[in-house]
Length: 172
Image (cartoon, rainbow, N blue to C red; front, side, top):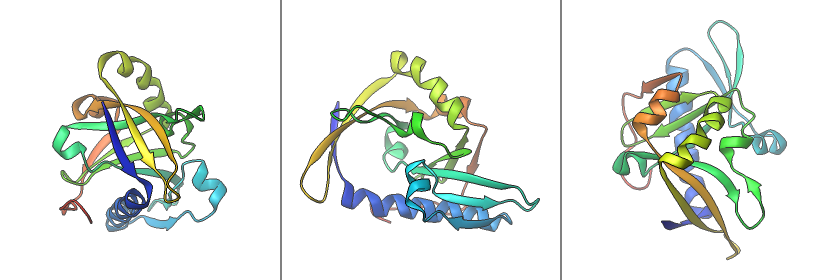
């Protein structure tokens, strides 16, 4: 199965998910700062969070708008098939990964290591999908991942939180 994504359309939608997760954390008493340094962003760090107890944590947020309909989350195993680059399931260096499903308002909290460990068995059990990504300059590349049922993702998650007011509509 192959779908096509446009990076220039996907990026603002991802940022909307980051804002939703940040607002949720702030409503729970956490102090949230957006990571702005490019080298830390490339390591998969979107948010720096200070807990009410003073602990500092880094979080990568992945927003999956299709999971609400398909009941499957896209877990990126290979970021660029042609360029032989591993996907965020294996390259994330944040302490926590938040997979946000806007249609449900659910945030699946995972440790990157746990997600990477689950990926191998998932590729044998679940649908492997390819996405054609179109960049603003017109170039394209292929991403490969696994469409993991939300129930299976829940089993690997540390916890699942529900945002009171999920994002609605195709475009936030």
